[in-house]
Length: 249
Image (cartoon, rainbow, N blue to C red; front, side, top):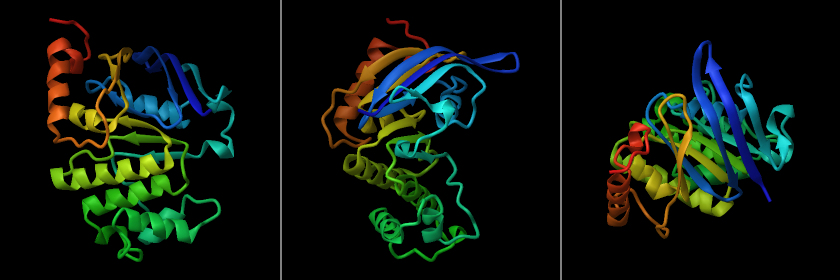
């Protein structure tokens, strides 16, 4: 069974400690959201898990193998950042095929069609709207059939209809392929709409202060009354949670 185990004893930049004594385990098929105040180290944590930064004390293991000792083909890591990070000299189709080894045009076309870009295969990134660029990045993240998908506020700054369409596409792709998703967001309602679990981080240095399992059935959307009610309930029980503390009132 695919399992991610994270234990960060300390991560610092120069004299500033960003993460400290943070540990959790997540399993195949889970959708886990990371929520916390700015500066809590959420994006830094994703970079550690992705292997983009190995300067920390602790360990990150996938199926009980250290990730920092070289990745294995079966891990199939997908990443989606705040910015789409598209190659401007490549078409939509080629931006998706770029991450495949070997290239699989049929799957790339199918995914672009799934996210609503079937008519834009030959379009250049500058010809796409911001929402379309995010859809392209979403297709690229799923084209490798990831077992572990890291998403760093991928839908930030989008208008509500565009964000809703992307969240719907993400949920459909996730439910089909069932990767383990770690999803960073500042939006608690987005986390409640998407996730099975929400890991709340403290103020810097970031620690895990609450591991909350979302009790709502799927499907659900950010605007659902059940999501609003659960958000209000969390706020009542943990009024300082989003500020990175767990004092109750």
